[in-house]
Image (cartoon, rainbow over all chains, first blue to last red; front, side, top):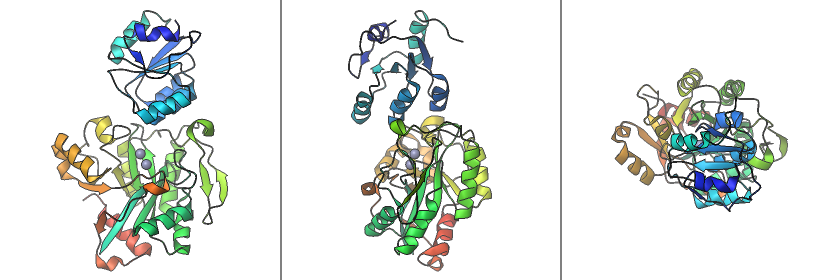
Length: 113
Length: 245
Ligand SMILES: [Zn+2]
Ligand SMILES: [Zn+2]
């Protein structure tokens, strides 16, 4: 799966620039506790969350995850989005719940131990 | 005796704070604003408190209460204020022992500067302070109480790291008489949605990460006249006023 397909798959839209076609999605991680995300999310992951603070951008960068997916239509403040663009963190917003979004991704991605 | 306060200020030790949040700058700005008491509350650390207290003595600045802003295992921010440096250091040891050993990435989170009373950089904290410790709110409250300090849910009106947002309510058994709000407007708003909060007293702090954000002399605590101005007496009186009833 590549990153540019993600908006279609999750019926959402990118809040940051359209990602490069070559960007791959290899897994997904759903969690709203930053400590867990820091410990368990990794490069290539799509991170599903309802969190939208500035630290979300930092944790996304730290873990190297491919994309932050804000579920339930959660928005991101302009200043935080600006920061995400600066740090080249891709952010997508979807009206789906985390459960629904994870369900769609689960059909397309291999389960990881 | 009225004491204008700002009891939630970050120094340059907090990676998200500006580098010019140095002891002398913080003290000078607080004095300029006419504050009687401030607290230095960096994320998960009290390491710069001594320097700010010393700088304030040097510059005849406000009373400085040592503290830290603790992030609990529930990822809730708690304003921890302690009666003295010794207690602050002890609380920091408790938090540090419960902090994952993840290193800071200054390129992502920012630098964590250790400073002395003359604003000289004495080192850098290498452990990431912008992460939760493994102790929950109740456990932390007990530890802080044993040290004679207070633990107050921070910026409960905000979306991020707020006890109200994360737990959906302030648990009745959480030992506090006070809640920290961003502003009286935010508190009113919050109270409209959560009428039960009327049982608590509001504390308004700046949560300044930049010098310019340190509070104006707008909010005050009523302290007994015997507290006097400056020094340990005033610190004690403030801590006393903030105790859970
Ligand atoms: Zn905070
Ligand atoms: Zn703070």
